[in-house]
Image 1 (cartoon, one colour):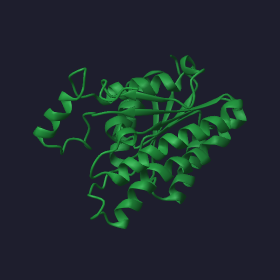
Image 2 (cartoon, one colour):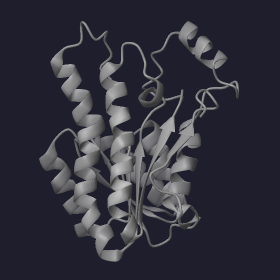
Image 3 (cartoon, helix red, strand yellow):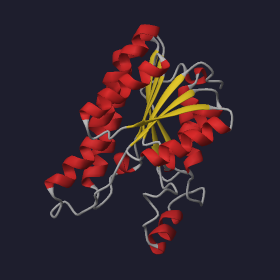
Image 4 (cartoon, rainbow, N blue to C red):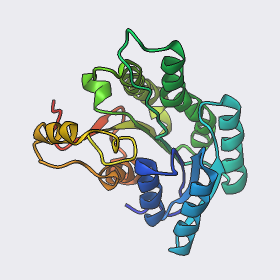
Length: 247
C-alpha cells in the first residue's frame, strides 16, 4: 500500500489517533502535513518523522476557526503543491447531560468535530478534482452510531460526519475521489484516559476481542482507505471497535 508521491493532510495530528495516522502515512511514503493547535507537539512529531526518513511539516491550525483552515490549507498546497489525502481527525468532547448542557459546549463540539471537516474538504477538494484522484477519510466514532448518555453534542457531531461522508462520496465519485469514514470504538488515547477503572472494565466486557483498541489499530484502517487498495470503496464506514458494535 505504497503512498509514495502522495501528500496527506492530517488534522488533530499532535496526539492520539491523529499522530498515529500521520506516522503510519509517512512510513508508507506520503508527505504529511501535520495540523493541530499545538505547535510544539507538531514540531516534535515532524522532527521524528523526518529523522526516520519520512517527510513531514507542521501547519499550526485551530480547526474551529474558518480562516485558520483556509490559510492552513493554502499553506500546505503552497509548500507541497497539492493535497491528495485528507484525514479529518480533529475532535473534542464537552460532556454533560443534555438538560444541563450549555449552548456554548454544543457549538464548540459541532464546530470542531463536524463543521471543520466540511471546511477542510471544501479547501482540499479543488486539488483532488484537478488531478482526478483523492482520498477523504473522516474519523467518526462508535458513539455516532449507537449514541452515548452525556454526549449528545459529541454523538450528534460524529453521526453528522457519517452523513457528510456519504454525501461527499456521491458528489465526487465520478472524479476518482473516494470519501470514507473510520469509526473507532474504545481506543486508548488522552481523550479516554480520564475514564474510571470501573468504566474501563465494563467497556472491555462489551468488546468481543477482549481488549481496548490502540491508535495504531485506527491508523491501519486509515492507511488502507488512503491507498489504491481501497479504490472501489466509497461512502463506507469502517468499524474499528473490536466487535463492540456489529451490523
